[in-house]
Length: 171
View (spheres, rainbow, N blue to C red):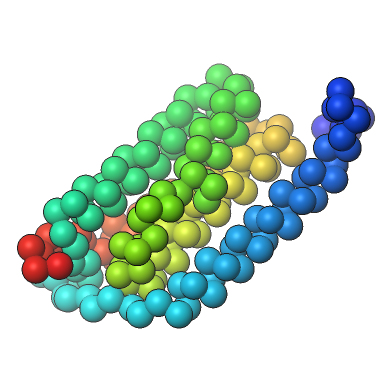
């Protein structure tokens, strides 16, 4: 904080301009995702016995979702341990790994079949991990990391409270 940083690389590239390009690319990517998800049909939800909406998926799709959830949980665990140790570089790296940039592009067709609110909550979570990574580097504050992580894990609670996966061989 307050430290002057040299943003020029050995090649003479001004890194502050690269950051602007990345920010523009991120905004354009987010706009594209929003436009695509608004044009996608919302899948049909079935009521479940425990009041959560049932998201019907094939066994393979269920495993894909569960694998993503496990990677998010692993990132949260890594962030907590690293933040407790004051290792903010590891916090930022772990958050970035599960951010938007590392989402599985092969899953786009499958994701289109998921309920719109389910997709929005998932995207919001990936965006918040990106924000956590950027803010960790910017503010260098373990307290800020815990605050953001508390807000971010609220998405996990909301999703698990609202949805239940069910396999349907007919999908």
